[in-house]
Image (cartoon, rainbow, N blue to C red):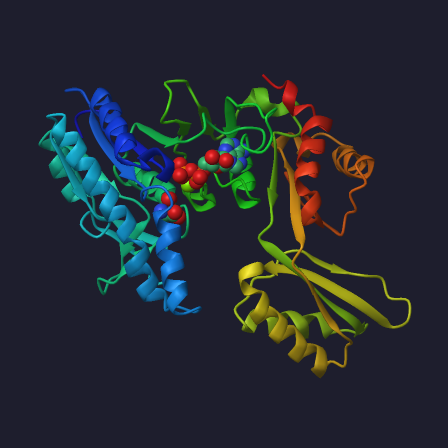
Length: 408
Ligand code: ADP
Ligand code: ASP
Ligand code: MG
């Protein structure tokens, strides 16, 4: 393309009602000049996707995935058409497209499809005609022309994947906060905006619960080294740059705190302590199609041990049934469940070169009488499983302990 290409993605809250759609239309017409090309990706209005999902669940508590994608993808079709209408009302040329129309081909893993290719010819043609292109986020289409969705929050992925396919010069994600903060600014008022964060840190924060960016979109941004500017659709302030590296960050051990209450804990009691038992348990769980996260096996005193692990709450019923079946087979004891747990995590690349971080985290929790039930670590994060009703207190305590409120 002859001119720089700008990608802008507007999230659900940025287009929650007609006034906001008009405001976004004004903003994009201010961005579009004769000397650039503009592609806008848009999410469904406000809570539309949740509402569509809830309707399906009123009919069937295990709705078929293919039909869910047909349903859930409609929200974005509405918003992209309305935005195109709003832009045209401001006397600018615009055209809206669904994922299918712009050739976003995915595999057939309905509700969490992976993008395979993007044939951007229709976008390129519209851009060369001087139009603002508005693409429905979160969706694609299989080889068989079945509509798919890219997992919740998937409009972020549409934006990043289009940035890669079109070799865009700028990729901006507009949301309802001013950027990436040290923790969720809606829960902790002392949270500070971060100027620059690395792909690795953002990926870890997103995977551990910071919903501000979809984790899969950061994976793609990292793979193709696409810098992302996360900023507010309600102000002109600079937001946060997500980039490959930033040497200045080396000194900061902990960049952010996240929490997540989407997991439940299962404990299989009195498991015979002998070779092959863990393999049997986790093969059984995996055959049920459930992903296990943290696993803890206690030290055996009496040739029997307890094994605890976490699974997504949405898979708890399936996982419990599988666990009970295996427990019976291997002559273990009772199978217990606990839904009232949450994960609190600290994230930062500087952890690689700082020591004493784990100790400081556990100290902060202890000072607040928060009991740690499980611990898991990665190279740049430490997570603790605690009681759900203590999670907000834990986030605030860790934010303070690591002095993130003082970060500028
Ligand atoms: P959008 O509709 O624009 O995609 P989301 O609701 O998906 O927006 O993400 C934005 C929200 O993410 C914010 O309103 C904020 O409450 C939440 N959030 C959680 N953790 C963070 C964080 N560390 N920094 C910024 N926002 C965060
Ligand atoms: N509307 C979809 C969702 O709510 C996709 C997105 O907003 O990014 O998950
Ligand atoms: Mg989002």
